[in-house]
Length: 361
Ligand SMILES: C[S@@+](CC[C@H](N)C(=O)[O-])C[C@H]1O[C@@H](n2cnc3c(N)ncnc32)[C@H](O)[C@@H]1O
Image (cartoon, rainbow, N blue to C red):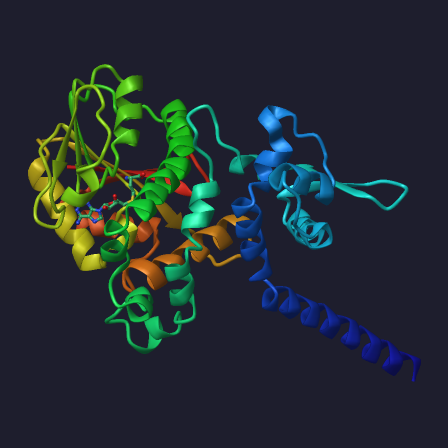
């Protein structure tokens, strides 16, 4: 009898843990939408105040972001409490029950650095209205992968939608640079594969900001070619020794001693990856090197933050850009390279999100 009771109560405990886990997932949408709300209200900047990061109550934050009054402090506090559980804010609770919030180390990624860059634009870009319409249609990528959920929701592809809107394009530039620049700093500290290169082409280089960083670190690169769709390079900023060239990597890529491609294969099908790899092979000299930076999925599906971040990004790609574009494993990249003549392949895990993959002829 006692034994039976024990079995029943441990089963109930196990089930309540599972019910709690499913409730956390069911309420997950509250997290990114609350983050978007605080970013739109400029709450992180109000707390940061040039580096002070002094803990503030919700009403003190409102006094900064709404200097003419207004806003519901209790509701703001509810949002701050939730985001504290996801380590965006640190909370101090005093003996009178008052709560104050400062930015955690994760929250600090939302504050603009000396170059005006942060992850805030990345978060905001991912939750624009047009993208939110597409999220309701994720399952469509399974039912009918011929048209992207974004296109089903908005009547045109994400890129066609973006390039018509100057405000969206500027958010995209900030979002890409905000994500790319910290990675590039880390990569350039730890990877020396650009030594000896004189002409470097960045295929899918967008604004050219990554190529400019590489060339600042490696003066041996005397000529840089930033290659992207004409609409992307037409408003790109000028950088010393960098020529912007508009084109389509699926048709051809510019020649160089080495080619750099960051964060672009994920939007292509396997066939398109092969086509571009063949174009790179043709554009590179004997022993030429293609240096790729991409999210690389682990083989095993575990519950780590890294795997979750990578698989979350994979579903984003499937929903917004290409149903058959995808995040790939190291082995999948290696096979794609071998199928196009790049028999030498090395992977460097310098950063937890983007790996550096070297394909050599
Ligand atoms: C996610 S962004 C990455 C930009 C940049 N490499 C970085 O890491 O910040 C992908 C870029 O690839 C470009 N792109 C996509 N397909 C392309 C193609 N077929 N030819 C040239 N550029 C392309 C896009 O316009 C975009 O600028």
